[in-house]
Length: 238
Image (tube, rainbow, N blue to C red; front, side, top):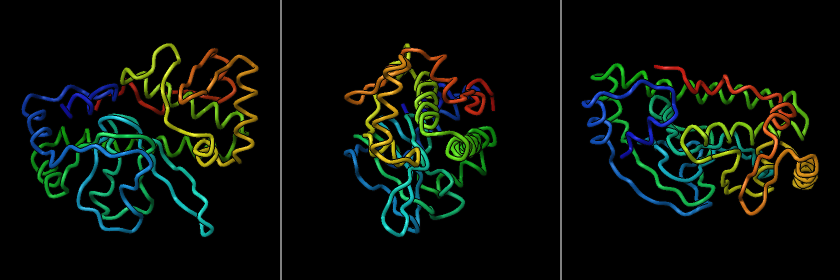
């Protein structure tokens, strides 16, 4: 059920029975996509929004030379492009990182929801506000942390987000990202990423091998990252 994915670990109040039915009935399609596939291109008009059910999706922008900067990584339960509902287009591209399963909601259906169900509307609004909170933290990470801190911060954030939905346990989780992906997320070179991962491994903080992240010393990694999880609003009700 899409409602179960939407509710997990998001600090929201439980949906009423009616709201659950409304959300389920509002899904226009559920489909699977392969990894490394483009979902939405910047500037294109959009008429639906996507709820990620399984897998990982990224949002990114390219510079004039075609160099990519990841601006968000989405995990199951995230509404990936809900802001496209009022804005009608995106200013960035959206793509899968690995194989995904998604549910789509037509914008005309979301419009009906916002007119009829105020609590459910607030929950959707919360999703966009949470995106904004994470964007601010990503700006801090890129602007104030060095390479080691940036990578540590990314892994700390993903660990918490995946813990909330049961996909990380004891600091271990799967992540279909490559070292070039990490470089494009953290604004450093691929060579630098390799050096940082080696340093973090040698210090006993974490390892990243074969898409498996293993945080060995959470306190150390959070100290390196200057990481505080408050901006994820894990226990904040709507």
